[in-house]
Length: 334
Image 1 (cartoon, rainbow, N blue to C red):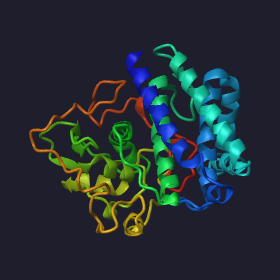
Image 2: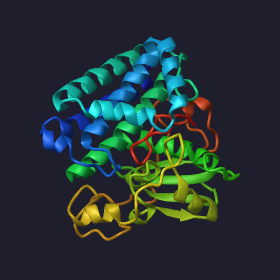
Image 3: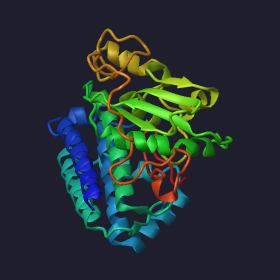
């Protein structure tokens, strides 16, 4: 369980980083709109608290959770939004305390899960490591919405490898949910990590290739930025098409963010990057340059599982059906 413990440490750190952004906000700042239409900072945190509570319920009261699943099927477009709206109406101090308690409880529960045990969810059951990975991805993505609303730059961390991994593994799902034929070939994905090494996925000789910075890839697959605002490169028609539809979240595809939104944030000096960054330039400081071709290249695997080709997607490794849509409102199921 050592690898799961390391993953849970990353999930804890991601939650703590977002906590540091919101802990000192006043009531007006909690009500500040985020890039997700109709959602304030309070909605973002309320949604994370709601999802943590549902995950805890899945682990501790599966029969009650099954009833929640039935409710979600009756109102697939509203049940997640309703949870966020209810939480956003709480006083900020109460909401913050509830989110803190909920994420701490979930971390303890996931750490205590026996190896091999699957937790019920809105889609396929998930093991503790998969649940933690999905929660980390969602915390990071909604945290990006909060940072954008506050005009705060967040330095990328090695925790992005979990988000990137889900994005790569969910490649075929992006086609499936759009009723498009899935590519037959495996892709090669090479991402420059925040520390300058490469995270790699797929066979080195693949004709379809995606390269760029890990942060840009994570912003793309969580649909927190338009492809035109990012410095990702695709070689091959299938790779180019994938970058147009990629999503690391389950549920129906969202409209995504408009082109120019992150470039505009950068021009304003916000979390998009430096104020003189042009559209399509890297979204983190220019000092973090790609490594030389002979730099260390980790296998690109998650802490909790061996590397697999991106076209191989066991049900347990698919993104959570309550994972993050770009509009802040999640679908009920894959």
